[in-house]
Each structure stands twice: as C-alpha cells, then as structure tokens.
Length: 315
Figure 1: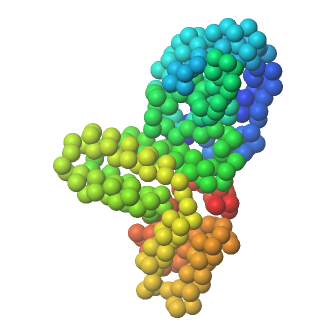
Figure 2 (figure 1 turned 180 degrees about the vertical axis):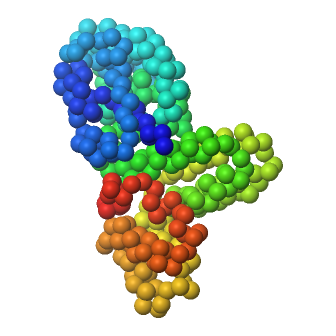
Figure 3 (figure 1 turned 60 degrees about the horizontal axis):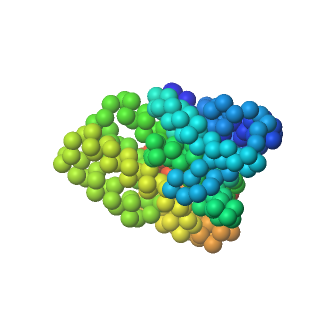
C-alpha cells in the first residue's frame, strides 16, 4: 500500500526555519499522526531562497491579491514567492498528496484569517498566506488545515478522516475506474457521509443511482467533488447520533431487549455529551462482529482511521 503523503510546514516538524531561527514542533503531528503518514515538508520562505534568520514579513493590500513585504525594509517579496509556489505546486502534482497541514498566521503559509495590513498599517484578519492560497487553488480537493485549528477535537477528527478517505479514493482509482467499484465505495462510506448531513448523503446517493447516465470519467469527477465537499460539513453530536441510531436499527432483530436498551442508553448519553463517541461505538462494533451483520461491518464510519490515534475518545 502506498504511504499516505501529507504536505506540512517544515517548522511543525521541528525544523528551525522560522524568521527568528526557531521552530514550532507539533507533538501530535510528529509523534502520533506521523506514525501513519509520510510528511512532505515545505517552508515557502526558506525554499524560495530567503535566509534564517530573516526579516519578518506581512501581507498588505487587497485580500484577493495581497503582497508579501518585509516589516522593516518594506521590500516586496511577492513575485519571488509566487514564482516559487507555482513551480513547487507543479512538482507536487505527481506526489498524490492526501492533505496539507500549514502554519497558522503565517503570511506565506496560513490558511485563513492571516493579518492583512491596509495602507495605514491597520491589520484585519482577512487573508490566506500566499503559498497556501495558491495551493488551495491548485489542489481544491486536497484537505487543508492549520495546526492551531487541529487543537479542536472535532476539526482534528474531520481533517484526519478526510485524509484517509482521500487515500481510499486514490486507491480506488488506481485499481481501475468502473461504475461497479464506485457503487461499492459509496456503499462502504454511506454511514460516514450521513454523519456529515442528510443533504450531501442524499445527493451522492442520487448521483450513484444514476451512474449509467454519465461517462465514467465525468461520474468519478462529480462524485469526488461531492464526496470531499460532504466530508467538509462539520460533524455534530446530533448528526452522529442519527447515524448510531440508524445503525442500531439494523441490529434490532439480533439483540435482546436488554441489549437494545443498553445500546440505546449509551447513544443517548453520547447525544447529551456525557460520554465520548468511542463509548457507544465500541458497543455497536461488538454487536456487529458478534452477529455478523455484513452491511454494517463494511461501513467505514466504524473505523475511518486507525483507532490508535484515539481521535474519537475526544468527540
């Protein structure tokens, strides 16, 4: 199996590449998630030829086309950064990236709300870093997240989930694009999609149901766009409770009254945020294995990423 490759700001790996010669090593990314992915490092400022240490920089001007300038000298580094970024992004086209973790607040690498200064030197949080903005335009379907936002358990769960889902998609395509294989992929991800909302779940279901009406290439393109957009919809306890209840319904005939009550009680406790998701999920998985319910056993929702990451202990 090809490794899961994720682009990452080099300072988050512990490289001393920041303007002040320091790093911002992130223990979760390096020590935990790093066991399951292959990091592809990038530091746009150093990689475009700037030294360490160096003058601090900031974004100025228009949010749609900000300029990257030095804080002290006012030197404009925009053209240099854009030229590097375009060359690097072309080189990354063959890497099959499944994600990108960037540095919060960086004028080159921040994902959102990077300070943008007007002509009077007044800042407002309104822009993305130049390299990351170009990355998102070049690879619109690749999940992008800032290390700061990954401190939020739900956003962390969603990002890692999208990374592993995109990897499964790439493996699907590598094995050959057929309508039948797409139907199987969709079936495996049904409950996961439902956890992100009924509207995208229904829309993708209709797309797959009408698979014969589209050329395979177009079908796959439309499905992937809808799939990644669906996974970007925020997870909530209410949506996940809906999925857990739906899956429990498939077990109704196999469980005793006491078992049904126990499972229903744990799902209710999760809904009320008294226990984490891992509690009802563990019991549900136990019953699925015990009673051999194939449709449920194949659902990616049960294990969208390695359990060793323990992400669902916190959502």
